[in-house]
Length: 436
Image (cartoon, rainbow, N blue to C red; front, side, top):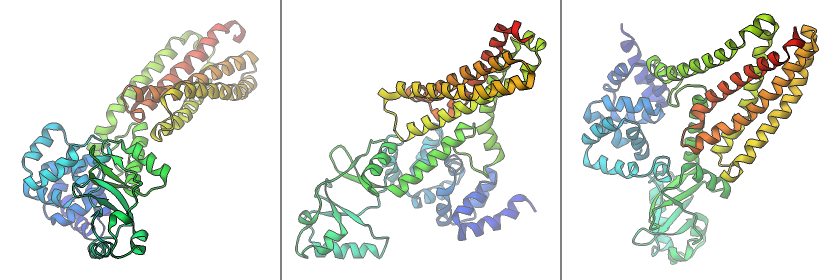
């Protein structure tokens, strides 16, 4: 029995009973095996599991599915989810898939794809409650009750005019206490907080958190209602982005999952492993420049990883704080220099504290107080540079349009290793006559 034959019954069962486990099981298969499984299932079952797949894997599968099955899946998916999957495809693949879509699906998805990436328009839901201003309270209540039989009732509704301009927000408590003959333009609240469709999703999260709202309407430039952003969905997006950033910091792909295919995982990891290898050779080159002093004082080799390791740890602390500040928008551009200097000062103070302890240990270990002075000074230099670099690197990366989570950690490791080795061995050369 082949792997596919053995796994198909299990995957089918998961699709019926637990879409999340179905998605995880599907990701353990190669793309060819996964497609053969999907061909045996109903589009309704597939569409329930697709949102749990990594975006890259879902787009790869969708591209190679038969046209009819692909159209049915896209039609049953939430438009936002379907648009995200399509936008993850390379430009040529996206164009090829788009040509096969039915006019109905193409129109539904095109609205999302036209919005800027990571904007409010891309993450909003079109599933919301909107009522017209001239509707009476009794009719509004009847309509809400009718809608509640088909889907979960909303805590808030939005009031629009006949051109779909957002003019008010409807609180359910206000609605129930109002006179039945009153119209909604009397009952609604006119103090509206609305999100422009172009607003970045991180800024949307900040605004909702600041106001304590669990939802906000999304409007176009003419204040027409387009959709609604719910805090719970936004939180899922922010958490997913945070986990992707966490993986990127260590050289893994943002779309990689625990059971992603081996080939996909290697494709995500190997490029960054080669980058790390190049930076490791750079650090090795610095050590090679001081071969003579190391040959004379082999005890120096013992303390090399101590200096570099402390610098790496101190830099990682600054890096973590600054990346969090960037994600949470806590670092205004005018205060970036102040933050960098603060982290450099923290590194210097930390270097003095740990350098003193290291100096005493080195003195006790080697019986030479000057060795303690050399390693203590090297610790101060490296930790000062580590604090500065840990803050400056992600800020500069963000400023020039690169992803701080993707490259900051690799650059920081290079800086702390190279400067740690150079400062320690350079000081050893400077004080050579006192060490031998």
